[in-house]
Image (tube, rainbow, N blue to C red; front, side):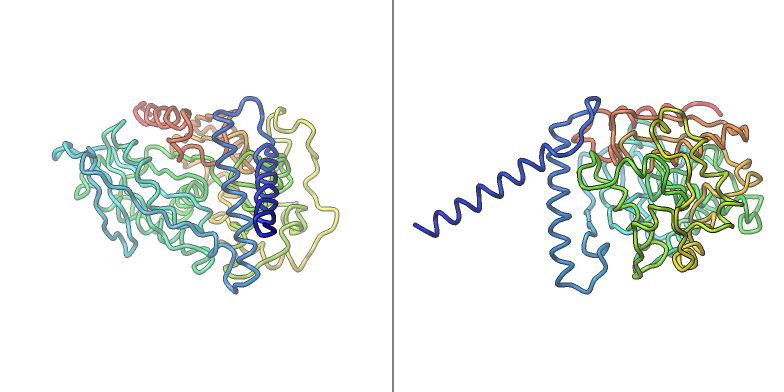
Length: 407
């Protein structure tokens, strides 16, 4: 009897905790599918709690313990063929409409998200098949190696190698060399932007005879690791945020990508304690909060400068954080002026939201043709969850419509 009562009491306490957590997430009224989203976030919270327990008994890096390995889904009734190959020594997956024939199709090189750390490459099958069905095109998805075992610049160099291979082999891949797009989401958006920066700042690595990209598509990209006092980073801190990506998790991703197995004090990063006089003089203009729209700055602290600077932290991280191939928003104007037509998608409930606004502001000033699609009621990652969000399907169609437009 005592055992039964103990189990009952434990079950009631557990149910109470989960019920509290279910309603604790700060879900705004405009959020789509708020009930389903709460269940997703509750699962995410349980996973995070379980990871903390495992860390106490493991010598592995946290990113290794939280790594998801999502297997691809195949279906004999698919209208898209899927082929695994290796380009430039890097594994890729090629998506092509079955009935495309020999006519060259528009081509896309795609870099997946996952904070440079998670093995979610296989989980993009449904999304990329949908893109290829909505618009007949050939998509090359890149399986770059992951941090923290393979920190920066491994992922960038592998994405660059695949990009170069594709540009050199458009005829073999049956791609239209005059209709090519570079695309990525989240960390993959960072890589897509960084690959473009590398191509434009190191033209000797890309022969002029090669075709160029007609469009660049960045889906809630991570673009800068300099100013963590922007409002979106400050707003979406803690365990109750309505998004699977919290500010704290993004800090862990950035540090793992930069430093590998090393760690730093994430709270100091959020206070911008890694700032130096060099940051203030050379890079603040690119990440200045005053460049954000008034709606984003409402109630935010305008000053980005830290109250206390930490030279040791700055020395450790700024070697990477200030590199335009790590933080592509820091690329010089002369480089960004060479960007093709650009589509930027952002989500309101996302620590990375303000990165997109800062980039769009710069590109508009530089005269680049840029389309900014901001989703007010959505969170980071929504474009990869078609079973949960109606807006995921809408987002797919809008991007395809953009790709079909003439430059």
